[in-house]
Image (tube, rainbow, N blue to C red; front, side):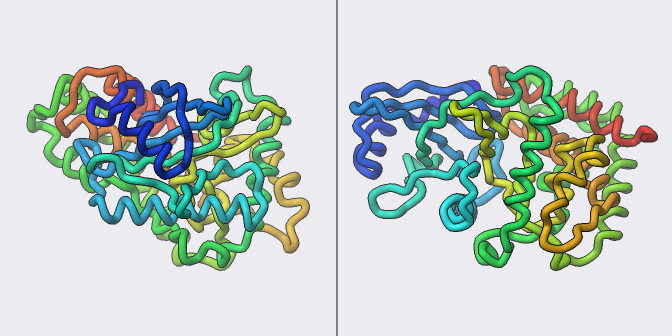
Length: 338
């Protein structure tokens, strides 16, 4: 998030870090990154660096109840720890446990705070254009992730059910598109633009649902997937290695959920990805097409949910508006031949 929350003080964070993680913080600065959580950089008296993430448990932009959200965070972060430590996937960026073995602590009533060792890095968003070697290096990381037996995390990680969060809200918005919205400064702009794209969105959802029906029930060939491999979640560390962050979308699902990262290059990338598998792998074009369209549909649904609710004109809402325009156009392009 670009805007620091006004109900989470630096003093509360300093007390939390010293009490539970034993970190004597000498410097704490807000990090205006991401679009969902709040983040801070911290330095302790020994010169060590840390990265803090505060998850909002409920509020204007959340539909998840506090207790279920806490349970979800706990299982997902414990899954990332197991991937890093037991599966020995060093590219998984996992949180630090506190002195009692807990992953997060509650600050006030709204936030669950998680602590990471700071990784000196740069997101691929800010690198030069992605090279073939870079893309294939990420696919080799995915090959290692996908080779981990899902049974290792069966009690922690859910299976894909092909639902799209906030879809019910988007469907309701499309059904009542002629009724004015009064949530905030972007509400009516959002409604008017959504009306322009209503027909392609309905067509894309129909195609999405047909592809889901064709995939049918979960298969034994499904694998552990990251599920959110945009460039901001792929970092290059100080020693040049690649790492993956933000594992909140971890699911057991078709491998194509991650392979969409390769885009149109999958035709040439499939061979190096599948070459060392213990048994022959099968690429599913239908699943690949499905996951290509799910991203813009899910993002549009989330954007509409945000702008129908009370909101102000902030740096974050300005960014959400720009993303909304981009996501709508991306969704429309998915209907074009080829």
